[in-house]
Amino acid sequence: METIPPTLRCLGECHTSELFTDDGAETVTSVEQKKVERSIQEVISVYQQIHSLPQPTLLREQHYQYLKKGLRHLSDAYECLDASRPWLCYWILHSLELLEEPVPSTIASDVCQFLARCQSPTGGFAGGPGQHAHLAPTYAAVNALCILGSEEAYSVINREKLLDFLLSVKQPDGSFVMHVGGEVDVRSAYCAASVASLTNILTAKLFEDTPTWILRCQNWEGGLGGVPGLEAHGGYTFCGTATMVILGKEHMLDLKTLMRWVASKQMRFEGGFQGRCNKLVDGCYSFWQAGLLPLLHRAFYREGDTTLSMERWMFEQQALQEYILLCCQNPAGGLLDKPGKSRDFYHTCYCLSGLSVAQHFGNMDSHNELIVGRPENRLAPTHPVYNICPENVARALRYFHQLPVLVPDQAHNQAPTAGSS
Ligand code: FPP
Ligand code: ZN
Image 1 (tube, protein in one colour):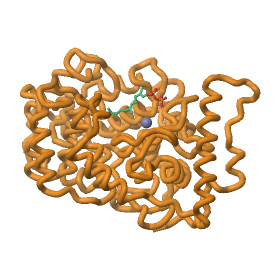
Image 2 (image 1 turned 90 degrees about the horizontal axis):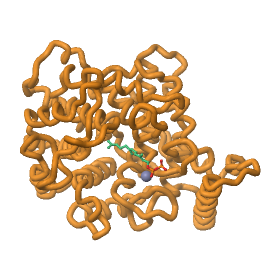
Image 3 (image 1 turned 60 degrees about the vertical axis):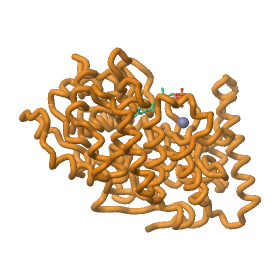
Image 4 (image 1 turned 90 degrees about the vertical axis):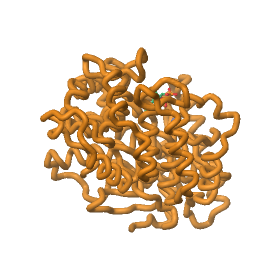
């Protein structure tokens, strides 16, 4: 393991030369950008006053307490997420696995029973008991159950009905609607491909024309929009690229322009990522954007690119870690978008996931760690396609691949899943 010596990039003199300049043309966007940079300068200066030795610390215990409480009790502020309850399970469970904190078996069993109540009689999972099935909570519920990884957890998933649900939201052009009668965007293809590949119900017919539809979402910027013709955005770019990886079709994307786009979304002063051009840094893109780099690395490697580093992803791993550790931690636990924002479980999950991507280079076979701050800052690695820990992906694939393929067809055997690499 390599630990970065106690010289933080953000304390370096040349760092201020990365501050935004508006070239004399002030706009609403440029004013907001400068405000964010000032707030980050303030955070760094307070840090310098308090710490003679720059060793940013991951507030493990505080994050653990915050997450543990969230599994049992949520404040009124979470009422608006009543249709996203499986997401809360996933965000919290994944954050805990990254912190290598075990979940007591009684709580694990309660989560399984709760998610079972979210499963729709017609297949797939809803945002809460009695609601309609939707692809987003379906993805979250399956991921949460795979993290728990017990027989009780796996057996919650009704695979036959899940396949029925996936077929019911598939569109003739290869795209998916998020729910019956709902909107189309590339998130749905990812949610469908993720749960289908994990639970071994992926068939060629289910994803027929999906790669060509996703290709249409890649635009002139190099990233992907939610649907063909829309602005490139990190959330959708991750979803589209990860789906292509699951379907073994990532080579169809213009990988070089995608690479250039994502690299340009890492903010030169802040160190974190923005979601799209001319927008502000946000901790959650630490995963949606930085998580693309392992996917791209693997794709370039498979294409035989000999110029690839075998030690680093193609982004500033140190700068991202500094942004997360210095600017995105609530001292009482939980992580956030940017200084001045409130903590929440979504940002806790995706800041920690991004921190993990930035700490670990490689895969299960070959691995190189680069940890900013003390070695105790180290998180568990995460699987860049599913965003759950690789051993939990492998265990789920082993379990579900012993079960019969539901709709056997020849092409299914040619559709690789990303978990095996
Ligand atoms: C823009 O919000 C955000 C979006 C348009 C959606 C982002 C999509 C994801 C994060 C992917 C979700 C993935 C799954 C699996 C469901 P904004 O305008 O508030 O933020 P911005 O200013 O940073 O663009
Ligand atoms: Zn965010």
